[in-house]
Image (cartoon, rainbow, N blue to C red; front, side, top):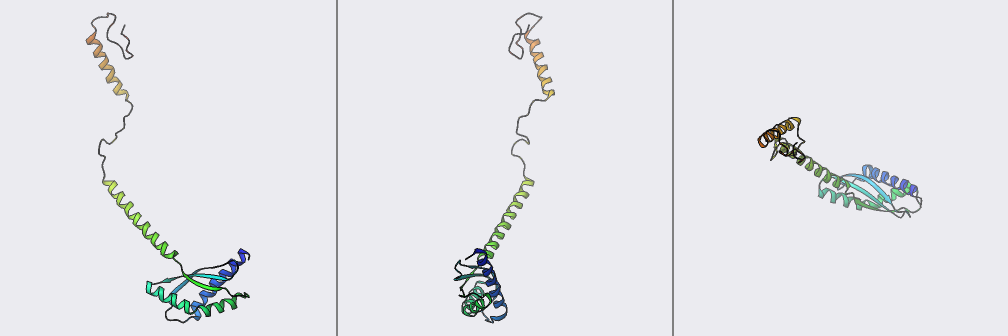
Length: 175
């Protein structure tokens, strides 16, 4: 079977089941059911209808029982409206996707709250050591101080202009 045709048939089955649940199935156990997807096998023999139920776990179980009891009526309507020679058997499956999405939304909200808490703590935080712990290259003012210290050392170690005085920066004797 062509995959595009199978997808069209699955979409039509989804529409028919949704209309049946909305208009013709009057079971009081049937809660607020939404048909989310339908898939059909390549040989068109079996169709799986995915649904969600808005409400508690008990309402979900009641809706599942109502769908199972109405399966024959829904299948005959699917066969009539799709025009298939052999009507596929229907299987109703609760769709866990909305529950998973809700769980992920809760996890994202928790992560956002933790990030905001860390940001609040960061605003009040102070450095443990100096504000800038990295060494910087010396400024020109620092070099001037160093030159003054060298000049004082030269005066202390050398009287007059004799050769072989205090070594200069490169380690050579001053001349």
